[in-house]
Image (cartoon, rainbow, N blue to C red; front, side, top):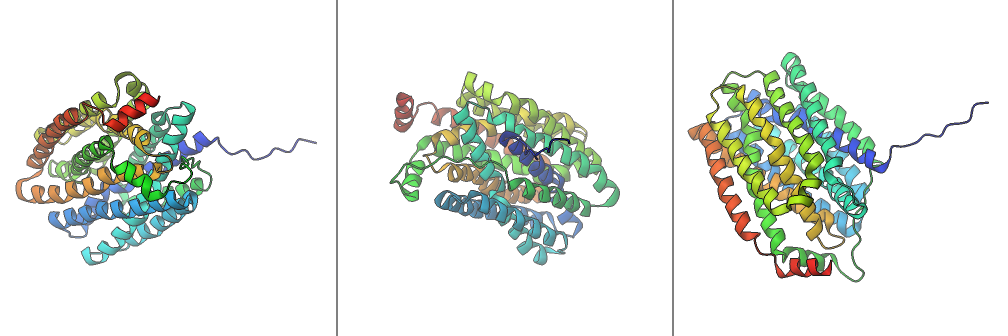
Length: 398
């Protein structure tokens, strides 16, 4: 008789990697093509900007509430599964909507459910790797790989069969995210006995270093939103196909992987402050390059800057946010960081970008983003020069 083999699940780290791969693959298959989908339904640039601006605002509010509820109740898995299932159903409704009146409630519902999915796992992985001496970037890089694969799959399929296939691919991968979420590790820090949620929240909001980080995330999110929301429209005006657009996404994703892999080593060697400053300056160079590119194909080369801009800044920001968060408030701190970048920052970037795009065109819009990024790099270098009393105390305690 042959011995009975028991089913072995992947290790906790590999489950987190699979989660990132599927989640960001699903996102890449749909989110970059949403503006084209809205345009195909007859929406104007201002209407697209309004819709794209309201979505991150909804994500900011709902994500904060979802993650605060998770930290307060510690029911992380139940909230993750509810949000993922709700996002799947809401996205299905978006694919069947037509016109702004039908799109508005369904898109906002999709945003409300999608908001906490990534942050709940991000804060868990950051906390787990900090305790074990691991590297957040080496786990998170599988999200970059998933993004590249999602874009590689979606572009040619959409080119041949139409934009509705962005939803088909997204919903298929999101169903996989739900399945993995049943067993993905959710290791969050435990609050000190006798401390309430609101007392911990007051400590976090009184930390100047954390508030400075939120400002940087806000501005970076604005510029990234302009790139994600309007680069494809700019490329389309220059004669690009959907396949070329997908190639630009793949280039950006491939550039993320080595920088995510090396992010922990870079943070340990140079520190958070110079890494974030360099990322802001390089992001400014990226947006200026978009503004002055003479042909759509140039975007492929320009997107090589996505790795040293987004990947390094995000890894450094997550690491710093997790370090500054009081015990038991990791998900809330990560949610606020995500909300600043992908919530309020994205909303301001999408809405202002839509107005600038309609009135002055994409090149002027990208130039405005570049100057704002340079100003923010200067602000960051000044504001983060001297640590707060709380940070000095934490350093001394080590």
